[in-house]
Image (tube, rainbow, N blue to C red):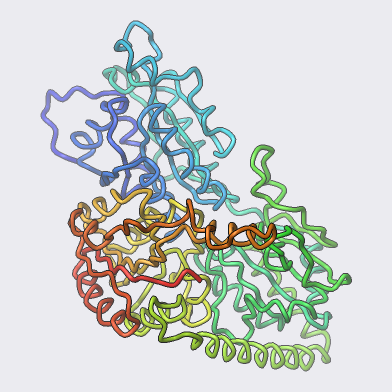
Length: 584
């Protein structure tokens, strides 16, 4: 904290800063706004710019940086959204954080609610009766304290709710006059002895034992994991559990749950799923996408699984479900289900499995045979992917597989992190994700990846790790101003443009419609393309103070350009390489 003059008069917004510091927040992202001018002044002059303030050009970026930081560290990060209008700007990013179960601590402001203190016009149309209504359907908790005495209580409650699984964003709204009023009485701030969140929830031991028995005695058992990798130690716990049980593992990749090169990893191998007789869904929401074949033209689905395959579940589905968003997907029909945190359940299941294996002399051989068969299949699919990556390898514009290969050749000996996009899964097929920090999880929808990538890079800013992101062109067009934030705050992110000059996901949908209806497929690009004119992303980046190069169209030119960018990133600054890629 800065040295303050002895006559300094404490303000109520200082209490909010006291709480932010008591909870050890390192950074706070903002887009400037007058509604929190009292808090802004307190952060700088009373708090000594701690948490460190990051200036963003759009509220979505402010939320996304906090989202990416939380994905990468497992720790929440706060952001501040100006008044009602800033909150409305940030809505989409808040919803994505909710769907991705990211603990984002959102602070806002309103009012003044006292009509006599409102400035004409601006303070009126920036104020809502209940501002939290705008995000209540996709936040875990929101509150607007009416007096300074309500600030610590709501702050503690919001934090605890936010980080308790299933985690998610929370919103606290502070009246402008509450912030700007002098503090006339002591307000108690929670000390280090206060427990910030409850301990993880344990699952029913009897149900866990029944689940383990099913897995041990099955012929082709699987574990499917989605969010388990978010907590420290869970990556290693799942490896131990899978090896003990002798099961195949499918990592859904909302977080990195399991090493992709482990011999028991069969992620994305739909053919092998046909033999599965029992599957444990371990903190999984999106189970159906991995296990069903979808005809995107007709919307018809057919399961890869045998009708006799049994599902079991350990996680938080019933506690995380809401009634507004349908992000929970189709219901998982399961024969055994335990509500509980995998942090504890994986350890419990490993202990149960070890005990049951020791009691049955036939089990070790059965498990070893299963593991050998799974490993053979694992080797076969990776060999097949390596061959598939050679198709059109020398094509210009480059294929996603070739782009993944070229970037991997430059960074593979670094302590690298992949921020979001997986290049249509080619990084998962060609790279070696051997440690939990390698990847905080797959990307989300358009207008999310640049901000989340910056948040992941911010999380690793003071380390020797190299954070790389494959940045879609359409995504960056939503918020090119995020490049300025990267330069302003020296966020060392290696941005490799996946530039196919189109919103190709939607273009592909229009191709399907044209084929179904017999209309002109050559017109499918209309309303989907990003050419005529083509954005110059390298020039755009330079104008924001980011080192850049490109456009690169020849495959052989990619690695040298990425190597030059890597030197910039290792010096502590962001860099961008624009690579022109094939549509498919």
